[in-house]
Each structure stands twice: as C-alpha cells, then as structure tokens.
Picture (spheres, rainbow, N blue to C red):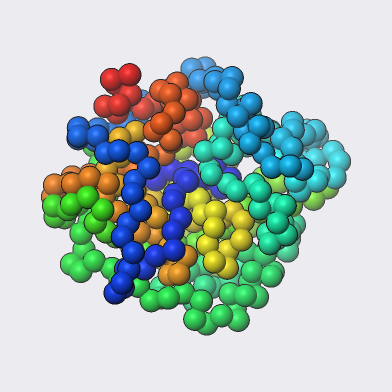
Length: 350
C-alpha cells in the first residue's frame, strides 16, 4: 500500500467500533461498478517519461487553501537548508517531489484549515517525542510534546476492539506487485475483512527551522521511531516495498514514504499524521477498488471493508488516487507517487 508522509494514502476517517450497537459502514464514495476490479499493472517508466502535472491541479490547491496559508516555492541553499525563517503556515511547493507537491497535498486530504484553529501543534523536529500508545496492541507514535503528555496520561485512551475469527484474509504473492491481501472466504458488500492498529504513527506537522534540512529532520524522526520498535517489527518494516529512488530518499524514508496512510482527524490526534501498518500496507491499487479502509478514532485502528461482494481467493484492492478524477490526473498522481502507470480496467476503458 503506497502513500507517504505528506503525500500519503488518504483513508476515510470515522468514529466507529465493531462491538454491540456499532454503526454500519459508511457508504462508499463512488458507486460500485459491476465489473470485477482489475489490478494496476506495474509498468515501470523511465525518469525521462515523467508525466507532467495537469495545469489545473496547482490552481485547485491554491484556491482551496484556507485564509492565511500560502503555497510558495521557497528558497534553499545547495545543502537543502532554508535560506530564511519559515512561516509554519507557508507550504513549500518544492518540499516534496518538484512539481508534484501541490497535487499530493490535495490527494492526501490534509485539513489545512486546522492550521488556523490553534489545536494543532506545529513544533520543530527536535521537540518531537516518541511514545508507546496504550492500545489493545500497543504501537509507537512520534508526536508533539503536548500530544505525548495526553497519551501518557490516558491509560484508557483506546477502546478494545474485535477482529474477525477465523481470519477473513491472508497475505500472499500478488500477480500485480509484491505481496497482496486476499480473501479467505466469500464476503458481501460492507463486511469487515480485517482490523489492525498502526505499526507506527508519525506526525506530519513539523515546523521548519532555519539552518536545518527538513528532509533530514523527518528522517531523524523516522530513525527514532524505528529504534523504538521490536526487532521483529523493524524487520517487517524493512520488508515493505520502496518505490522511491536512492537519489531523493534513504531506504528507510523511501519505505515509509511508500507505505504510509494518512490520518487527518482522530481524537487525541490533532492535525495530520501518517501511519504505517502491518497488513494494510500490502494492499495493491485499482481505480475500481473492491475494498475501503477506515480509521476508527475510538480504538485507534484501521478497518478494511469490502465495497462490493467478493469471492474466496479474490485479491483486495484499494484506490491510491481519487477515481472521480480524469484518467490523466490519476495517471500523473500514480506515477508521481509510486512510479507506475495504471493499467486497471477503468484506465483501459478510458
């Protein structure tokens, strides 16, 4: 499953539980097509074949920014450090992958209006704390000092949850790319396939400091979070796909950038966060997905639900990009983020 740090998989968020009286799954955003979902063939393209961003994307992002927030190409020196102090409500157009930064902000579903509300802590990377979240299955979180204090002083922060028994899924080699998630039984629309907490959770609300390299600062936070994992979980993290090049990303940051899912609201979590998961990270893409992931604020877990009936042995797919966008926009986003061209049934028809 691919999406990273600021440009991560934008999963729906919902306050829900699977206990008695639990609400039903929210209706999928798009109507379920009747055709079987076809995977996206991972046709790797060369750097010279880079897709240009549709011209309307940058305009759309700028138009939707809240009052007081600006999108600018900010000046840096040859070492990557900012040349002047940075206003935390200024988004650096060049902070990510060149001309793809703007559409990735939009894709991530980040609530930039939170910057105006005062609830979000934007702190320097050096002040970020690594804590263990007291969930049913504890996980590591890199958060601001204020959020860390709330977590450490809330032993009942996360509600208990249940998982399907016996398991309704398995991880196996995918004909699309790497490992994938497959069903163990036939399921109807809206059924829970799996529920899991993050492996680790990383804040994305990092304030830039004069004289610092923001990429190196984020990598430092990642290194600290990884050091807090068990050896088994670190090994699992290192087994995930990495679609980023060594020129722009270290191996560990590339893995995180490829596999992080976005959380843009969630109880004690104010602002934007990225979560790396053990099993949802294995999900492959289709523009006609048959599954849908939801973040539950009460249990601090992700739930994976079917969006149409599936047969036993089917591979489950989620959408890495908004299926309502044009084919050109989807193709650009998928190439910019994951370096592959989508050849799913929807893209093949259009």
